[in-house]
Image (cartoon, one colour):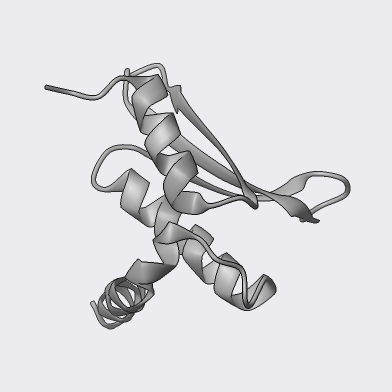
Length: 99
């Protein structure tokens, strides 16, 4: 059974931890789009720092990996369930860079 948009959003929100704001949208091709933004960091101007990945081909994993790296770099000591997968995220990054 395929999880609904709101169920995916809740799961990602729990995994991302308390500093994240997670939104899962549906694009015009009905694919899920994962947006994880930081509640404390800003990027350009007043816009929150965020990771934005399309849901196809492990979009959830790509967005969560980027969020995990953000937490480690900008918010050391913060606890979030996604940090348990840091070693896996680093391995995927290493594989992408070599491939």
